[in-house]
Length: 76
Length: 146
Image (cartoon, rainbow over all chains, first blue to last red):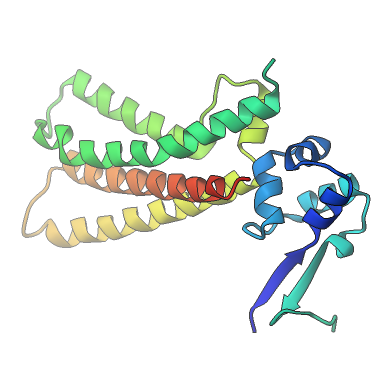
C-alpha cells in the first residue's frame, strides 16, 4: 500500500503568523525548501525535518506523519 | 539591500529557466555546428573549444553554477530540493549516455564513426538530456512557489 508523508507545517507556521520566507530564514534554508516540503512536493531529510521542528518549537512527530489510504499509519 | 536569501532565490529562478535551454543548446550544437566539423582534425582550436564547452557544461551540472555568489547564497541556492533535482538529472543523463553508447557501438560496424564523433554524440546526449531533465525538475518545483 502506498504510504504518504503528511505534514502540519502550514498550520503551525500560520499559527505564529509567519510567512514561508520568515520560516525559511528562521531555519536557515531556502524558501523553496519550505514551500516544497509544506506542499508535500518534497520529502525532507531528517536534518531538515529537525530544523522545522526546532524553528516551530514542535516535536517532529507532530509536524510529520505517515499515512496509508488517508489514515495515519499505526507503528508496528 | 539584497540579502543572501533573496540573492539565492533570484539566482535559483534564473538557473531553473536557463538549464533546459543550455541542455537544448548542447543537443543542438551536437547536431549543428559540431556535425560539420572535420572529425579527426588535429586543430588545437577545435580540441580546446570542444573540451572547454563540455567541461563548463559538466561543471554547471555537477555544481549548480553560481560560482561568484557569496558562500552562504550558494548553499541556499543548492538546497536539498535542488540537489535531489540535480541527482534526477544526472541519472537521466547517465542512462541516456549509456543507451547512446550502446547504439553507437551497435551501429559502428555498419556506419564507421570517428572516435571524436562517437565521443561527441555520447557526451552531448548525456550532458544535454541531464541539463534538460534537471532544469525541468527545477522549473516544476519553482512553479509551486506561493
